[in-house]
Length: 129
Image (cartoon, rainbow, N blue to C red; front, side, top):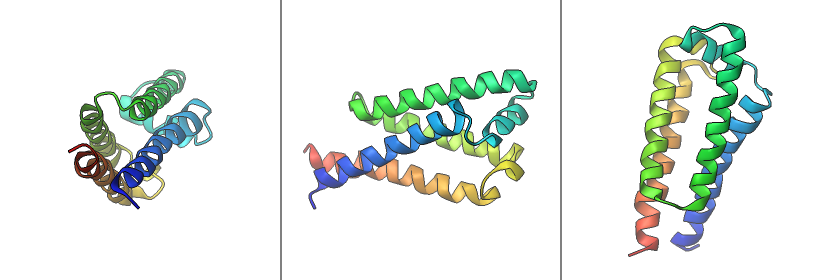
């Protein structure tokens, strides 16, 4: 498989993660604990947390579209890594009991950030010399 093919596959997988988390987990509320996490971290009432969770979900869907567009892909990768690190640090510190794998979620977040970094700064560089 070529670097371009691997880059494309990983790019679609990364975008799928953002769409799944944004659309299914947050906007459609298939995973209600996301709303509980937002409620705890922001310290707002349940109705406000529901609204914020939907806004976060929409933002995650927009992130997926940005990823798929390829527009300023290096900036996008930096934004993704920063957002995932920030979100997961807050969740780790303020709501570890609400996470699917508890504090072990940090490991999966780190692996996701590594994949984003590798896809953009290793494979993409080789794709465009």
